[in-house]
Image (cartoon, rainbow, N blue to C red):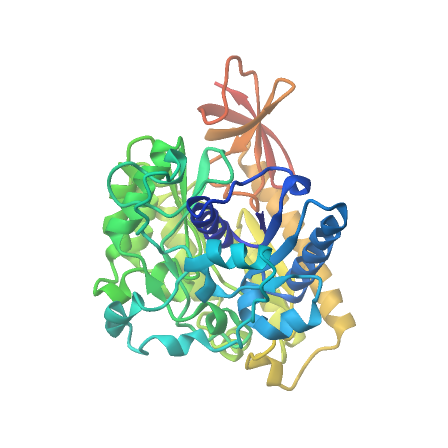
Length: 473
């Protein structure tokens, strides 16, 4: 099982792995030992699509060695393009969409037996559920939503590591034994950002029921997970389709109280939906880290309006001020798009001025590119590729300087670091303000007898870009 893309895809891969194992497949670590290679693709932006295709092509080369019989594409790229991907990439033996996930084991068995799988014709998955969020509950069970399933598997032969003995039985098999695990809050998105195609293939926003989230959290705690990373396309909307938009505020303390779990982290907050009560819950709930992953995307009001988003520098800085008034050392990260159609030099300057004032720990910078089926792809006022590249490089250089300065400002702070690797006497992990994979790491010196999964106190003594060096207390 090869997973590309975001943490949400990691959850989906672990659901597929659980279903495959329950269906009689054995997971192997070495691709050369596999009869089937399943690639969970990403279809987010052009670079991610290319990476997915390249991975499928690389995997197909294993078939020449005799052991590997099939390479199968699943995930967002497979769902988004279906039969078109299958026709353009004959090296993949099958392209499976989300609707194939519940029967993934039987699908793979048929493919291995030489049966031809007929890939789906892509559709707008937003049309599968009612437009009104409150009406989705009754219909949601009839639609396949990856990563949301509570097990309906009753096989006594199901491996113990694939599901808990009691309580809600998660159809999930951990693929990474590390001390952090993503946990899906919701899937899909109701926003209509003009640059984003995700809602069309991920569908409308659907919250998982709190009992399902808590049941899976307890199972993860039993598996040795110390940090829960709550993921979705839009965590600030959690509960709106269940009749309570403040449901996340009440769920967070319950997740933090799960046996074995010591740290809970929330990802992907929409600034326009980030209400004061949620800020307070994240900033002050014991066991929940003050970490704010805010999807600003830009700062110019004119650009944001063309993006079908809301905000301006004043409102964004006001939100950051509200956060830091309650949690002065809070971690803040965001992403921005540079070179959006119609972006002027004044708009770019507004963005840069905001980034200077915001003092964020990490900012991802993306150059605009057209995405199939999006409104922005039809806009006029497109900048040429060289101009987009130049602006992206300019903002990236600024961000690198700003985030390095922010890291230097943390020298002298005492951090709580979750250790994730130990090698040659050197320990590396993440502090409260550092999210998995994208926010840098903290190297801890002066440790003896430490183990992966330990939380240690350490004082920051140096920095290298966004990465920190700290001495154990």
